[in-house]
Length: 497
Image 1 (cartoon, helix red, strand yellow):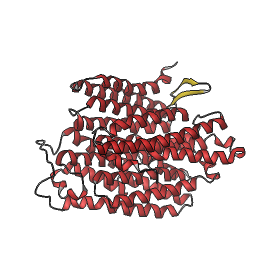
Image 2 (image 1 turned 180 degrees about the vertical axis):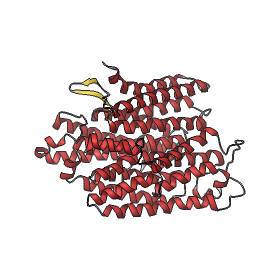
Image 3 (image 1 turned 120 degrees about the horizontal axis):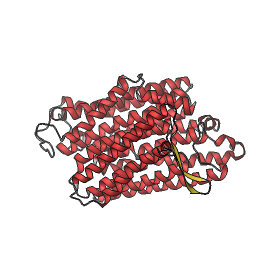
Image 4 (image 1 turned 45 degrees about the vertical axis):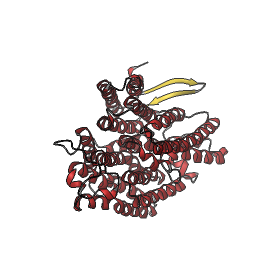
């Protein structure tokens, strides 16, 4: 077996092995735990960069490990898989730095960071899966490893939220398993294939193919927070801020959206899905979710819950882009995987900083916070402007391609959805920015902590500043050869069209 074949496995192990060791560490082993986390991230990033360079030059990184008769555990680092892997590994690094500052020294740190690393292992496994059964295995590992993070605080509220999360995601997993088994009985394969593999059996199993699509989309739609399957997500905001960031920008929600992308393009094939009449209902459902999430965010005072409803809305841009059917709209949807990730993680980092430093948990408490925490609020503002779609931030690039792609595909109604969504985004973000920058602060903050010369801990301040910088340069330099957008063009050319 060549070294190229082993690299995807090494990427999985570089976060899995530290996770297992961290579970065994006593609570007081802070430095050892931090060192293991950072070593795991270092090796993950090295292997991911190695694969990016190789795939760009035409190398293939693929490994098959026997599972059962005619089914393998398959890891395959194609351009699309690497795109999500790169997002996960870079944001894992920044979220780990943030989590060390936020939670290190608190109770049950080994348990937290062990499951934290296990979540990333599962997410990267989802990213690199070469077939649907491998995807399903890592997808369910992700479900179970995220649960202890959601209930980490051990409060009654967190246990209720965790219970609802498990109820939703395990039902979704059961639907996904049913659809996967049914699909295998019809096709005899579960391998992800450019342009899909359903077309060869569609004619004689028309009804079954449609029902399987519904089952798969419902299964993935739970984690992607498609309406009305989103109910677990706002409740899960009782988790610590690093967990919220992980759920929304890196792991759980994105895994659901990524699964829908792979079903539409690499199981069914977008042309077959369109001929079956499946993409238009999916686009309508995504549009309903976009508007619904924005409307719910508009009336939510709790800052993290407002951001959660924003995620419900924003992740459906990805699904809308692939359901419009056309290369330009697909670019808009796929690029939003990264653009939404860096913008949303910035917002959750900011919300965590306000809570940890000043005890702020509600929008109504944010008067004048920009004067007290200017760097955090500046990063938060960039993320918010990007979500609205204001140029030159990355969110504008996503919406531009989605709108242009809708016109190219003759789906003019999508423009109205995007316009209304942007207005609603402005409606729930601009009041926050107005309060923070232009209103006088209260005489005292709810629970202020002094961190000396910095507005908050440096380990909490640097991650949102860096991700806000990413959101800005990904928009300003979208046309450069090194931007995420250029890699999406590679995905479109090699895998989708």
